[in-house]
Length: 377
Image 1 (cartoon, rainbow, N blue to C red):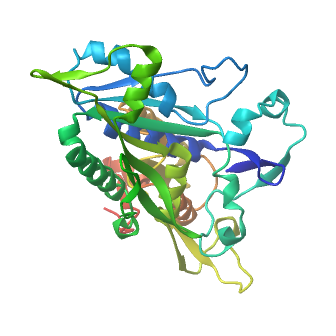
Image 2: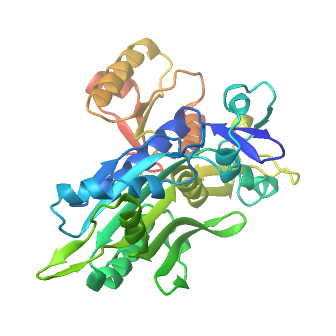
């Protein structure tokens, strides 16, 4: 991962390599599936990154206001029937950048200082000295779900969303015990919130907010637009209550990497796959990513040198066949030994490695190595 820093971390951006892009994509899809695909009566929307104000070039710092403005149209779509949800995913910008838009910063990187951070690094040592605020102050990919319900069901729905989001985070965690929910915080008589928290190198931090906003946001929008936003229950009408879940994809990705990172002392071969600290100890690095989050589901390696050309043909065919089936496959064509390729695959969090040998050519058998057990079958 490459981090670009300007003004001592005030503005920053970062980019991902192939494994980072695929891991981020998988996590993004899992988030979308949990908030949209698997939910009934949930409607995705999208807005421009610019605020709807008279001021030019005002970038949005959150998705909440823009998402709420779709409420009148969605209410008509559902015939004023509750509950339902509106979801938006898109880029948001730090408040300092959103209010002080700078064309030159966004499009001219010549004045920026580059900082290189190894993608797989030790939270317990090397990353302790890194300025993590850089990662949490740059342009972000935010996702927000706004759930509208009746006043009578608001409290129960709020509790259900807290439990649902907590279970989702624990489902994909390597160590579910490190995922927790904060105590309920009452901001005022109409607003309460809770946070999903994960363990980072600096301690616990918030990765998702679930907040019950009451009916005030809808009432304010009704006052501004002069459009009726009330729902009916028999002869009674009421203003919908709003429950909001919001998170940032980049924060989710960093939480997953820190959760999945493990290291153990071992005697290893290739120095490029070692982190060497002042004590001179060799550390074996492994990412225990959930298979659905892992950048690749399978790696293909060859254990034969004598018939390498024939095996490469089989590997290419297998790679293409699996990719056509929608399975991401990592097929490196370097000269590393099989054991060193195992080490690299473990560092990338790849759950399985297919080992092609002369037996593959003779009898069609392929060994399969499991990352977690290191057993070959």
